[in-house]
Image (cartoon, rainbow, N blue to C red; front, side, top):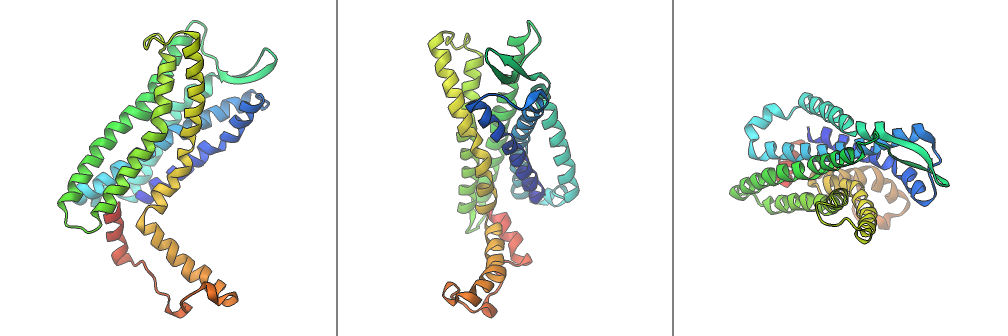
Length: 288
């Protein structure tokens, strides 16, 4: 199940990244890709955004079940349930991104073309507030509550277990939590303040201008998170590192040894696998 969620998270990040070059070009020049591409890329952007958050939540729940409810997890953490929950998550993410697809339009404004949301006449304020609240609730509040609960229970369980790797697991858990909220929380908060300027007493030209700049900076920072996910969920995992090390030693280094023996300290026939099915799953559970 964990591998299924990691695969979907990778797809989600790639989907999110797919639209970034177009938005970068748009920020530097103007929108030259037409109305259809404006709608499609807006939908892709939001689908990647929401699905990425949802799969991080699923990974959190998956680790919670594997560590806190190990017996129940034997029945619940199956490939079938992993595929079903992944399909449900994609459906929910697409539904959440529909307003971005529907309301974004390419229009000529002044002397250049733009790609921006155009809500029904007289309902602009309500739709903007709805979109902002949806993004903050689905992208910040709910994930924060779920992660706090799950990781608190995971840490308590690990601290009760006599396992030499429990400290690594606790450290990895904190990295996952802290990195996500460090990158996304500032953007969500700034957008909330910008949308509800009257509520925060920020409804003047100077504050509006400062918030617009803050949105650009925090959004650019938040986008980096999808590039850091692979390092957190793969390279920080002991199981993946062992697979990678074994693959490199047995399939790459052995060829390098033929041409440059200095690069390979040990003879190829003495290289043994550092991962076995009997120990790998125990190390994976301990590390995660």
